Amino acid sequence: MNMKMKALAAALALTAAGTANAGIDGFGTGNGELFFSIRDNVNLTSYVLDMNVSMNAWDQNANQSWMADATLNGFLGAGSGDYSWAVQGGDSTGAGDVGGLRYLTTTATVPTMEATIETEKNLGLVGWNNMDTSYLIGANAKLDGAPGSVPGTLGNSATFVTGESGYFDNGMDVWGNNSPMNAASAGIGGSQSFFYVTNTGSTVAFLTKNKPVDAIQQAGTFTLTANGDLNYVATPIPAAVWLLGSAMVGLVGVARRREDDQVIAA
Image (tube, rainbow, N blue to C red):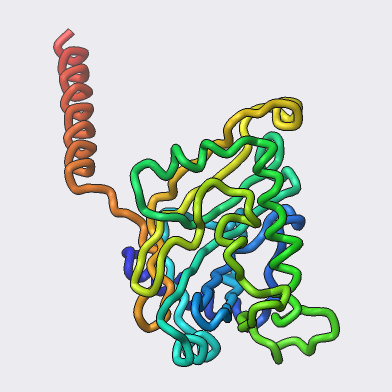
């Protein structure tokens, strides 16, 4: 299957998944889901989308797309044009990593951003969990799966106004005021890098020492298009790398043939 077909399959799968969801899985589940948030900085309104991709299912090497739905189209149609947006997700239970915390987050596309994130300390990373309690619970109240809701009637996206618990305020840009970088550092038409952030060291070190976190930049970038579509494009491996790999394979083949010839001659 070529890359275009893989991207199409991912988009179709995500569209289908959106019809049978139970809200955004929070960080405390051990396998939180990714969510897309955008804020109108003038009107002080926001929109959130359950992207239906869990931390464990995230594939940094696959092109993926989330098409703008009617709710987002309405939000942008009534908007000011001044927006900030982010893609985020997390696990605060300890599943999957020694010491316990792992997060995925967008931020500005600059060469030093990985080093900037790593100025965060292990204990400070605990505060990133504030996103789960101060934002996702409020957001889920308007999404399918909310207590008392009828499945399929609320959808997997919603809008909020300032003051509501699901409103994406400036503090959420910096993970509940606990991050050294801004996760929502782009507007419409902008692109952002994506990072996987975890604590470092053993559980004991995590709890007792002020060690820096580990940040790993993902292979691609997220872009929010003018019509509201959210695209993740994995950076392709340069042709020169493929050519180098092919050349190495060829050299190995030549060496093996020479060894075989020597054995026969003996």
